Image (cartoon, rainbow over all chains, first blue to last red; front, side, top):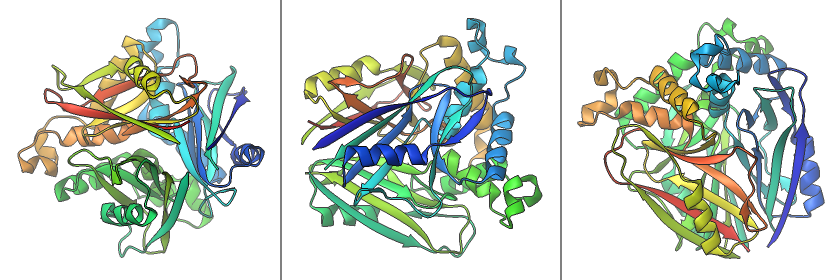
Amino acid sequence: MKSFKKYLYFRTTQRREYINITGKVEECLRESKIKEGLCLVNAMHITASVFINDNESGLISDFDKWLEKLAPHEPVSQYLHNRTMEDNGDAHLKRQVMGREVVVAVSDGKLDFGPWEQIFYGEFDGKREKRVLVKIIGE
Amino acid sequence: MKSFKKYLYFRTTQRREYINITGKVEECLRESKIKEGLCLVNAMHITASVFINDNESGLISDFDKWLEKLAPHEPVSQYLHNRTMEDNGDAHLKRQVMGREVVVAVSDGKLDFGPWEQIFYGEFDGKREKRVLVKIIGE
Amino acid sequence: MKSFKKYLYFRTTQRREYINITGKVEECLRESKIKEGLCLVNAMHITASVFINDNESGLISDFDKWLEKLAPHEPVSQYLHNRTMEDNGDAHLKRQVMGREVVVAVSDGKLDFGPWEQIFYGEFDGKREKRVLVKIIGE
């Protein structure tokens, strides 16, 4: 069994941002030389997500608006977590809706994806350095 | 390390539908002859989910009603995504609540499940052909 | 390829409770002697979650209040599922928001975690015995 790991680094310019990282994960897979196995991609921070959905800018806006409705940023005083001098209570909740991680099958040296599957990094409390882990195991 | 993969195909008659696919995944596991490992089951389309919950018809209706409350189908104009000639903006959001994938332990040649765990395919934009991937790795 | 499995048991004193199980999963990993691989941790019951977030008591309260807003326990008659003599319809829904499972990378014999990642067992229908599965595969 082979295993491969790499950290990806992000620092967004906005509080909330959605970045297509499919190409970066494909690079990792090529580097790993693994042909059959599983590829885990997870946010290493608890106010960010890794998720799979459509690379369509309207949809990205829809997600953002919807997450703000489900877990609004303001008023920041509505979250007990923000008593710790943070203002990111909402970001922890948004991340639960979108998920921490994805596990993708590796078949024949490729991410075994349907036609519109793209991997996104979802940032909900940006403007600071964050990490994503890519871990691949297989043969 | 062994690996096994199979696609399952679905075409629902309704826009939203929930199908118990536990038996089909168990068939894949038998075919794979893998005794110890991990089994990934994921929707390959971004308006569908694979999730694990209870096989109880009242609960399935509860999920459906609740998802419609969290991310209503209508008015379709509320989603920017629907400017692309689609009417499935809500389906992309519903899928995030229910999740894209499950990872199930394989122990002693079986899905290592609690007493009520059942795997469901959740369709939120049906009436067209969709695929689910079953990927098993182990020994 | 090595594989390891262990069940963890919980019986909470309250209906809803959030328990940090990171230490227990780390114990499993040490016992497994696996250095590189993947670690799956999942609730084996469908009214409970395993998720990764921050070990901060204010945030835990925020999660609980937010889940009650998204899927209130009462009135119990709002859920068809509760016609089965249960009163846990809400718990099945809450569990979908928080997720069934996490998959964590194992690197160099450790859970490959960011600085604040902690694994929680989220109970939404407690006061009865529940199980969590830890399954680790690798080398």
